Length: 573
Image (cartoon, rainbow, N blue to C red; front, side, top):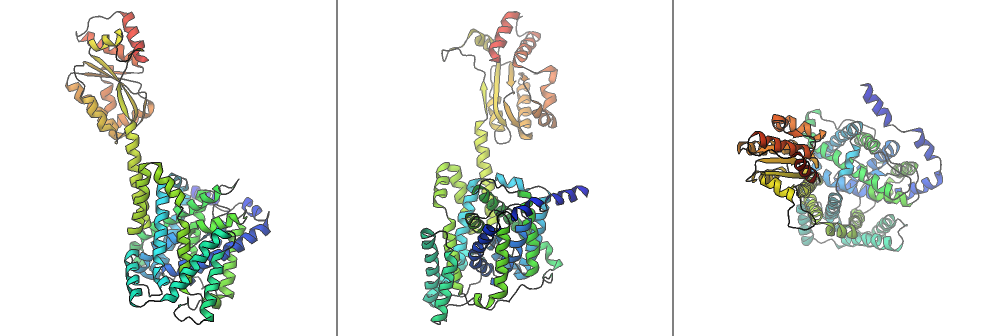
């Protein structure tokens, strides 16, 4: 218990964090204002897309954004509702309803806190870049497709599969076209994309949304459906949504949400580190901050939150240097919730759809995708498979599939590096054997050097090669270059030795490393290799032992000591 308390204390904010907030307050306040302007339409849009409404997106941006800024592990991270999380939440809303989503968020927060205490943050660094690029592409496609109903101005069709919903929305639009909504959505998206190329520092998303709202109000465009009434403030915190009888069925989606929150937040923090000099996030503290944020957001009706890569990048480019900027962004959004709710409620849903369509387009880095696809065939396969799985299944399954395929391909590549070579005594002239080699071959002794890993992906090939040894009395296995060995490798080695022994072939070993002994001993292979003292520290000693074995069996006449030493020295080379 004391260890857990000590670990929790290490995850709390430090005096250095507070001191950093007072160094450049003006620059951080301006950065926070800029991020808030960018975040407002995104928070509204992602709240609508999740199925819980714009007010849920705002509550998440305010509550989760503030807590993650205070307790997170990055000075520059900005958190809130994101497109990736929306992708996961849509089917949860369809199956369990709004209360189910709030419960999932609460459980996900607990899981993230547990991961932080268990120091799991460091392991996120092992996710391959091809998996990251693949699910980023898949997320962009899903976010874009999710906006089709609002962009076309049709009611969102039923269904939890984005491809099915999109197709039904298109069919509905063909029957009753709404060109006003299409014009607003495309106009907002075009202004954002063109403006980003022309003046990247200007937040064109809010400019485009204000313009679209003004056009809809001035020209009384009834076809442009607005967001609708928003509460003037955050609701009082409540656990009324919690249904203890449903907790068992919500564990699986909660694990999925927590996994995504951890993954996206740590990736975003890593991106922020790469954009600055002298900034480095603490992954475990970041998980702790995201856990607290997701514990609190559901109490105010908010959806699960993560670190947001786009908003974090805006924060860094705006000159932020401490967590004061992210905290300011949350405070400004809170002021908007309290003071400007009537104005925000008039924003057309089609305009928010345009914002998210442009966001989806900007998420796709064509140069990065092209480079990843050209790197290796394995990277291209993993990228494409992860993207397709994200689109057809969901993000968590896509990441699992991507990791599994990437791991299998990596094991295949490593297994190819493992080889077993007959010891080569050839001098400078290739194809000719030295007198010493002819002597060993005549004595029916052969030495093999095993290079690389001996584990499940390569072990059976090794068994086939070793079992085919013919016309030999003694086999010497040089194991000093075995880099790793697992239980499968040890079992295969034991099996090969037993098969050779049954054929009357003695097996000597040399150079077994301490790290290999546990695996060999666990399956009983070590006792077999030590049989009659056939394990040696060096290869020369093993060759001498082979000579002694053959002489004792009457299969080899006494060998002069000098000749034996010369042969051993050549073999050791």
